[in-house]
Amino acid sequence: MASQAIFTPDHFRAERESDWARLESLLKRVEKGSVRRLSEAELVELPRLYRATLSALSIARETSLDADLIGYLEQLSTRAYFLLYSAREPWGRQVVGFFRQGWPAAVRGIVPELLLAFALFMASAAAGYALILADPGWFDAIVPPGLANGRNPQAGVQFLRGTLYDAPGQGGLEIFATALFTHNAQISILVFALGFAFGVPTMLLLASNGALLGAFYAVYVPKGLGWGLTGWLMIHGTTELTAIILSAAAGFHIGRAVAFPGPRSRLTAARHAGERAAIVMIGVVIMLLVAGLLEGFGRQLIRTDDARFAVAAAMLALWTTYFALGGRRLGAR
Amino acid sequence: MARVKVGLGRRLVTPEGVALNLRLAGAGARAGAFIIDALLMLGILIGVTLALLAFHTGFGGSIGNVMLILWLLGFFFLRNFYFILGESGGRAATLGKRVMKLRVVARDGGRLTGGAIVARNLMREIEVFLPLTFLAFSGSRGLADQWTAGFGLAWTAIFLFFPLFNRDRLRAGDLIAGTWVIEAERRKIGSDLMRGEAAHAIDFSAEELEVYGQYELHRLEDVLRRDDAAAMAAVADTIRAKLGRYDVPGDRAFLDAYYRALRRHLERRLLFGQRKRDKFDAA
Image (cartoon, each protein chain N blue to C red):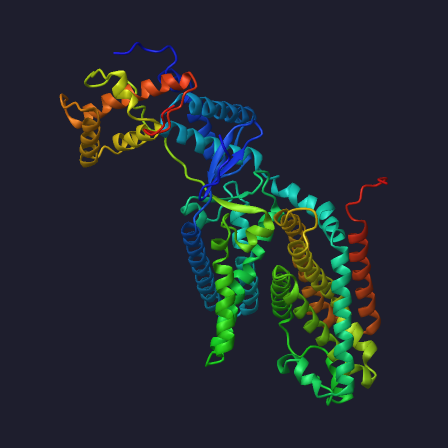
């Protein structure tokens, strides 16, 4: 029999095996719950055990031919690596960071797309308005009958005034508000996701929404109800339209990064755009929740133009100030 | 060693300078994980709906509005946040991914941010839910319009098979989030085949140990660990024929002795920096 070498895998493994078992048990506990389950001492121990396992892996690769052992060390190191280097901040701090800095900064990062989306929306609204004034026949093509609900160019002034100022017929405002919120949020997520296809479907959806708005103006303005309609729409519209334009802008942002990545690689550009746009989208869902409440309750309960305009202006001021100034360091130049 | 990307294997170099070999999840495993998650979501939806209905009738039908709101919100959150919540946990995997032993990681090996998780999962809206709504919509029109159905089918196919058309198996969502899905198997440490003494000490000459290399040693290790009599008999016969010796005890004892001798021999050469990869490696 060949003479026993001084360094053998037997010694190697026996000396370190307890460390590996310890790391494995710590990993199991963290993966089940959270890092907070570990004591202070164990938190310090974790990176030490990780580095010990990693160095054992490199030694084993160079000296041992035990495939099973190397495979085991490989997966243990990988698990520990992702736990240590991929760990996220606790939820609470993430939420605070989102409102204090992440959300307004992400919105400021997509200003060019925001302007494009706004311009497109306004242009399609103007187009819808002009089309119907020229030929009321267009109304049925632009507005689905279920949505129009009798509010078409042939409707009388009295009826139209009623749709703006009358008390709601029955209760159930809260269901109305919830349904509005979930529906609008789902649409805006769709608008965002469609941005991936170079932004073209997003443009179509945004344009059809704009045309819809223009169509309603074309019904109300000739009857002298333009001002009232604005109040009726804008009490929640300043929030909701901003949210929809934001979601379209987030979609464009991704579409632009995929189509024109610039000096970065396409994948890197897409990743940066995706992350920023996703943060905007979380904000959009929150804004739509606010808009749903304003539309469901505020609009039906507040029935004078002045009060409606006050709420609308306040919301608009709130959002623009927040997005323009939120998260900027004081004193930073 | 040359940096090679073969199949689904990928290399990640840690900040400590050690390369870790990752394996991307195959299309089958990911489809399986998604089906489990989808069934689970459907189960939750049905369960919650039934529970709310039971509550509603239990309270004499007086709280219908609250129930309806809960259902609307519940449906919205389930549809949009099931995946996000699952992947926000410590294991970065939904239940389906856990069952299939997968996890989501950032492609650059760094921190998996909340934004990335949200981005990759909101894209499901056009990958899964839009075609579904589409089908339901055209189905409800009675005779599904052929063009619509065809368009819906093509759309679904593009996004469904998207991961198969790039070598990193990226979904559209992975693409914009900078993530990919890897296998996250947990394995137990096996017994040390070199521990203790061999049942039969057999001397092998240096020439007999020169025949094979690392590759064959690992196949031999597999066979010994599996402990399958038929496989061991076949392997033992092959080795005996190659070495030209038939003087030996049972298959298991012979293979065990040869494994120990070969591994000791190759590991000693390894200490001097000579790695013999397989039997064709003349180095």
